[in-house]
Amino acid sequence: MSYSIQMCVDSKNPQEQADWWAETLGWALEPSDEAFIRSMIEQGYATESETMVHNGVLVWTDGAAICPTEEVGQRGRRRILFQSAPEGKTVKNRVHWDVDLAGDDKDEVRKRLEGRGATFLWEANQGPHFWYTMADPEGNEFCLS
Image 1: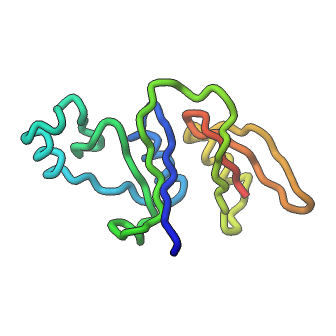
Image 2: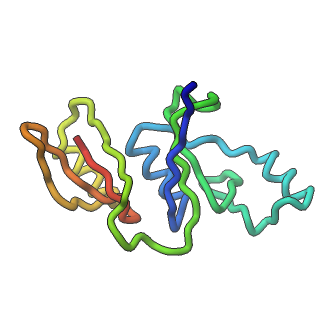
């Protein structure tokens, strides 16, 4: 038997991180179920303070998820969940992800991501394979290859 997993990323602002990574990867924001959120508030399981309006949609404040567009709603989908954490990033990530650019020019993608708030950290190589290590707007490392 095999299992599916999701990656969870602590974040100061889960909604903005989800927006940034959805655009970066060409993935989709997972849709918010506004009726469900309202019913949780009406039944006393949640409070208005646990919600916010983001891009005109009622969402949970403490989390936002993205997945490949073609997998939205599917069980076992690839998924990254950005969840609230009060502290900022202070040390190197123990886990990071590599973004395979599928042949797109690394320099062009790097420049585009820097224009959207990413930071170039260093270039590295292993034999003939070169990559850039970058940080997203909250400082989480990732590689472009």
